[in-house]
Length: 77
Length: 308
Image 1: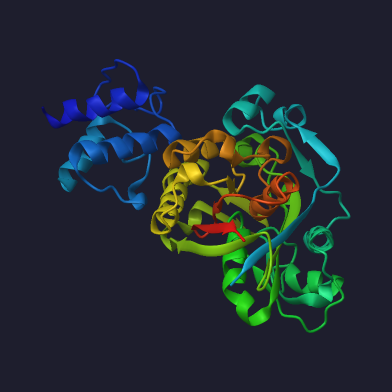
Image 2: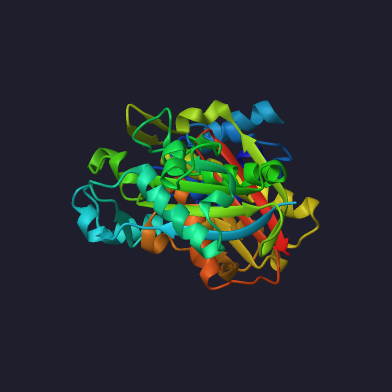
């Protein structure tokens, strides 16, 4: 499975919605993520990609869009 | 050895409802309740001081514990909202208790300060004997009730709590604790020029991970199952955050005592106000207690106590 599809899989699990946001769509502005959901999203990404995301990286800016998440994870894996 | 011997608290009489605040911050009472779980908070009167209300909580604690101030070996006072930064309220509270040579130290850490006090008191009790820990805050003077500061304005209330740590006896024995500081995020919560500032979104994200991690680490290394904990006493920051911690720790919701609905977030006082209110209905315990808090610094941690 491609990274983008795996990120989307985690996002669907966290939101409980069958969604397919545009890679540049803000997940916060669209209401898919809030501060609480972001921590679940990050935890899900850690499990899905086998990476550790430090607390210092917990920023809405870094996880605001599927594209930003993909860029971030590319540096991690 | 160190024991939890008693708690005390003091809360202002003035109740401030969501209805009263909503119009000032351009929000609805329903929204305030939804995002915080708070129905009302208490505000101090103009004549109250941080040290003054802390003294009232201290006196309540000593009375409930059945000791006098002369029996104290040390006083630790947590506050992030004191009128005077240095010296802070500790020396005034000691003086108010009639003490002129008992060491009284300040812990200027909002929200997490009383947890730090409890952890330090547990370590210092063997040298100083009975250590009184006070958390006292008048946060209503540090926030701006306007739409620009809406996320902080709706949360905070005033009050004071106290705990007595005793080297020899008490209803629960403190067995372990963990304490952490991450200064890289110090701008997330701070007081500057008398004004409290908080990046609420960042705080929620950080606290949602750090509090459960601290609790789980403490329980794991002491081989205590979360389901066996009699009560989790947390800093009353936000009801939604507490519910998030419940999910992460995987313990029954009813084990997490909350009173944020009635008092709002009273910063470093909240942990001890909650402990006092909980203890009134639980004079004796049959299982472990877990205390945890998160606040400016960032500082966070947890403390474990078991029945004596």
